[in-house]
Structures are given as C-alpha cells and as structure tokens.
Length: 442
Image 1 (tube, rainbow, N blue to C red):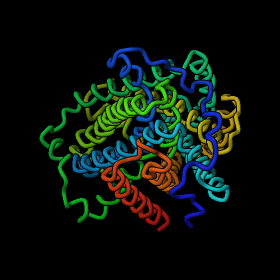
Image 2: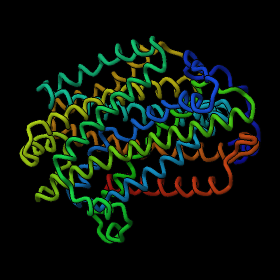
Image 3: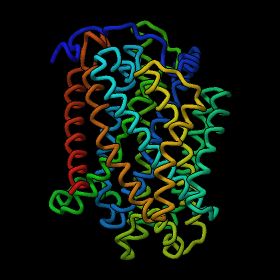
Image 4: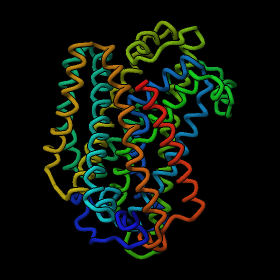
C-alpha cells in the first residue's frame, strides 16, 4: 500500500508545465508590504463563488423556511471547514509549485490518477449543471425567458469568458468581485425589507442539540454541510494562487502563503455572509409567516413580493441568482482547465474546453426542463449536490495527505495541529456526505 501511494517520498516526477500556463506567475508583486498584499487579493473571491452556487441557495432556503434561524450555526461551521481546506490548497501550491491535480499525477500511479481525474471531471460537470439551471431560472424570473431557451442561452457565456481571459487574469478577478458586490447589495436590500429578528439571528449562530434530536432538522443540516465544500474549488484554488509571481525562497513563499490565506479566509467569510443572508431572508420572510415548505428558487421569487410588500424584492432575488450563475460559470471553466491539464497534461483551447463541458451539462438540463418543467430542475439541482458529495472525498483525502507530508512539502508542511484539524474535518465531511448519499438512495 505504501508503494502504491508513494508515501514518505519526494515527488516522483518533475512537475512539468504549470496548469493555466498562460496566466502562471503573470501577476508581478510590487514593493511594499501593503501593495504586495493587495496584489494577492482575488483568487479567494473566485473560490468563494463555489460556496454560494444555486445548490447552496436551495439548501439555505429550505433550512430557513422550515426552521427559522436555527441552522445558521451549520452554515458557520461549514464555512470554517472550508477555510481550513482552502488554506491547505494554497499551502500545497506555494510549497510544491503544484496544483492539486498535478500533485496527484506526480504522487500516484495511473491506476489511481485516472479514477481521480474522472471523479474530478464528473464533479465539474455536476457543478456546471447546477450553474446552467441557476442561470436559466434567473433569466426566466428576470426576463420571462422560458427555461428551455434559457438553458441554451447559457452556452453563450463562453464568449464572455474568452473576452475576459484575453484582457488578463486580473480582469477575470475584477468581474467576479463586481458580481459578488451586486449579489451582496441585492441581499442587503432584501434583508432590510424583511426586517428579521436580530436577536433570533444571533441565537441562530449558537450550537443547539435540537439539530441532533430532530431528524428533519439534521437532514437539512447535512444538506447545508454537503453543499458547501465543492471538489472543484480545491483544484481551482491550488492552480490560480500560482498566478502571482511570489518567488522561490522560503521567506518569499511564507509571505505568499500568509497573504493567500488571508485572501481566501476573508473571501470565504464574505461567502458566509451571503449564505447566511439567504437563510435569514427565508426565515424572516417565509418561516415567520407560516410558509415552511419553500425550497424551490421559483417559489421563493414569487412569494417575496407579497410577503415583503415591495415589488423590487423579487427582481433583486433574480438579479442575484443570475449574477451567481455567471460567476460560477467562470470559475468552473478555469477549474476544468486546471484539472485536465494537471492530471493528463492535455491542453485544449479554452473555448473548446468550455463548450465541451457546457454541452455535457446542457443535455441533461435541457432534457429535464423539456420533460418535467421547473419541478424537474429542482430535483436535478438536488441530484447535482449528491453527485458532488460523492466526489468530495477524492479531492479532500489527497490534499490532506500531501500537505502533511514533510518529504513533499519541506519547511512549509502543515503543522501537526493543522493536520489533526484537517483530518477531523475530512472525516466529518466524508461521513456526512456518505449519510446524505445513503439518505438519497433510501
């Protein structure tokens, strides 16, 4: 077993050409601590997009409408887990010069890497299906475009991505951050209109044994946990953090790790703010008025106007959903490129890679919307979260293994306390996602 996984040994091959080579080390770091820190801001926000995708929206809406503010603590714990795992991604990339896909290729035999690559590709396709559905629903709610046509329109986003990539990686990051600002503004206004019980909000962040005693509450809690950490985010972060030209000395790498960790931590706290806002909005608007079974995005949109007494609330909800779908499109494309290049060293033009992934996502999404309508899209959205849950362990376990290995990481290997915490998080996530899968099958 030890020889199979090449444990306690240095990387077995040269890391080769970096994934996303066209932007690798393309962002120079200026002199001055604060200016260098500012240059590191960006990748964390691109990663944060994956923590507020339509799957998170569905679970947060269901949790808030059914149980009020009680599940806010689950969103908090999930986010803290994500912060630890994403910090390990930055550590792996900066210490070894490899993203997670390259590290798997260099550490494991093909007997292991090929299944890992397939698992990563399946996760990215599942993520893209959720983005197709979310964007199509956003177009339908905002402009009245039929879901079937909206699904097809999502294929055009490839041209947006190509244009942004040609202008430079910082333009991509600026696009992501701008849309995140739009999402935050939309939910900020809706929260003001909903006028939640702020005392209840504060109490919702405190642990409660009711989650363990109530099977239905536990199931939704597991859903929030299961929909939070996305496999493709681990591959993506370890690739895009290397867009910074941080140098090769230990001191330079330590500084880069510090700045990258701050960047991802702050960005993920922003993601928590958005996810908590969705849950708070559902609790204040639906749970407080007796609407305890709202889980569909379309249902939430229709109910917000009458409940909040404002015609602008549904439009803000739809705008935020559309912005979320567009954001996720960019990050899923980059993740897919990093996975294919890292595992297989196959380099496709970005437009071809994007069209291939989107085609695989559009076929099931279009089929379901044509045959089942909006109710079917909701079920397909849940299915994508189950698929992602199944794939998660295939990314988390190698990540923890690599960052704990001093032979591979050198002086920047994770300290023992962090390794212990990461192992605990990995075990919890795997166990909870396994339960979600079993419940889904049952």
